[in-house]
Length: 315
Image (tube, rainbow, N blue to C red; front, top):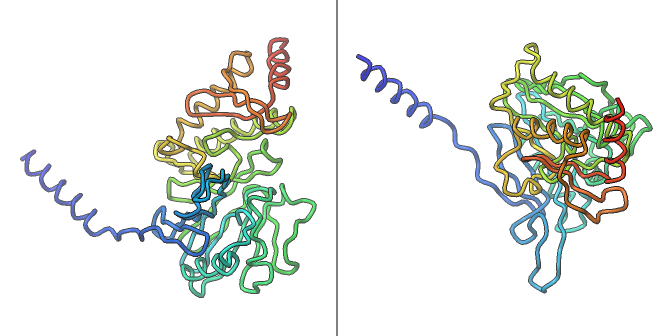
């Protein structure tokens, strides 16, 4: 009897996978590459096979740095949301290519555009949609309190905790300060997917630009844990995957999951004790070290870190 039950279960599982609609293969559109995370959820990178993400030597022997910045397109039954606008590109008709790849996938559905945080490598292709009357902007107020170069009459600023219903796909927001004061995460309801921009880094160090920002980030990480663990939010923590703003930066890591977040918490604890390992960096005088533990890294400043450890020891 048990063998029969196992056989039926195996047949049912095989049937399920056989009937599942295959995801479209990655395609290049102008200077972009588009692949599917799940049905109706797309990952867009401003890179191609000829112009890969990261650091490489081109055909002319020149060293090239392509700090590829990612966008995500979520398509519901009624509307669609494009998260971030990546780097500003002046190649291969970038603006036209970006509009094409978006509208080819959403058809005549209403397009909303949002931004995870106010940095140029996430707002760069504003020109593709600024004059596009079909596109509406839905922007986190916490990071754009002073405005931003968004079209009047087509822009709405939302407060933390706001949600958007695209028709069968709902995204819920939470603000995690640190990298910027209003860095916003988007959780896709009913799916183990969270779009994080640069709020917790993409695997190669979340950049923190000041002492106070680090203190904010500590609270932000604990706030994120509490949000994920809250039963009301119905998040499957074991399956959760964080999709950052620079996928190429995760390097050899297969994915950013809860282990990454747990490692981040441990790293912060070690920094408070002054025991965290770090590698020197040469980004700028502030971002001079990559503190690391497990899969997590924080790019910060050694003098600030020393000050923080001394402050914690005095408590």
